[in-house]
Amino acid sequence: MSDRLAVLPQYLMPKQALTALAGRFAAARLGGVTTWAIRRFVARYKVDMTEAAYPDPAAYPTFNEFFTRALRDGARPLSDAALICPVDGAISQFGGIEREQIFQAKGHRYSTTALVGGDAALAAHFQDGHFATLYLSPRDYHRIHMPAAGRLTRMIHVPGDLFSVNPTTTRGVPGLFARNERVVCVFEGATGPFVLVLVGATIVGSMATVWHGLVTPPRSGGLREWHYDKERIELAQGQEMGRFLLGSTVVMLFPKGPLQFNPAWQAGGPVRLGEVMATT
Image (cartoon, rainbow, N blue to C red; front, side, top):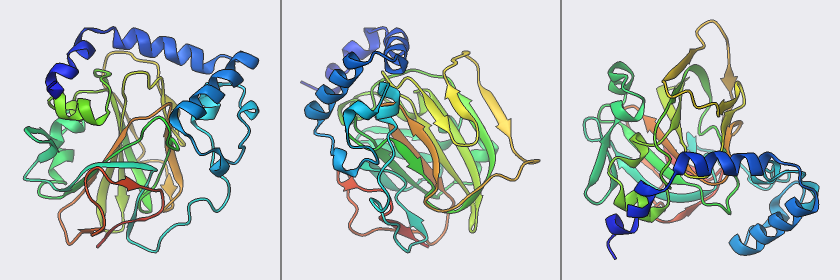
């Protein structure tokens, strides 16, 4: 079966309604039902709870608190590198941006302008720059950390679809990451601007940042934007910047320059928070 055929049911399914329903269930305090469901989830996806700050599934009163669980101290030491991996997950794609085109999968590209919500001036900073797309599966740690130190300048919530972001869908849906709902976080770092884009997906009931709290829901249907010129929000390398409910994807954009990705990285390979992502 072709990837495009495999994802056809996603065009037909009520993705927004399913996501809203999942969000309500994940936030509900259902006692033993919640604990039973978490244990089933841990067994189904082989979640390594020994790395969690609280390894007992009964310690989480809601699914949301389980999905966004903290790691125990020392579980992810930070490498000494200009850019570190911000998440646990798998590499979808990474490499150079060709003018403003980002490689998604064979036969599929999308533009930096589309990704950041139509702001061509913002996208221009990353012409012929570099990108990395990292996929978080349901079993992964769901908090996102800073690949480098940065000062927050803008945040944009871009409404959109809620297709799955698994590898099959990535190969089968054109422009997936510029099509799904997303939260664009713009930072100024030591070598210039960089962007982290948190991409939503089916059943991803919420995306949150440490400075704003819950960004979505609500889903108003229109683009929303926040500027932080008058605030001094600075995050250190390795510091938590946001989190997902369930798995999703992070797309990072970096400007043109002498950036060299980790030579051990390859598309489809696993990554862990804190490992070397790139040198500059």
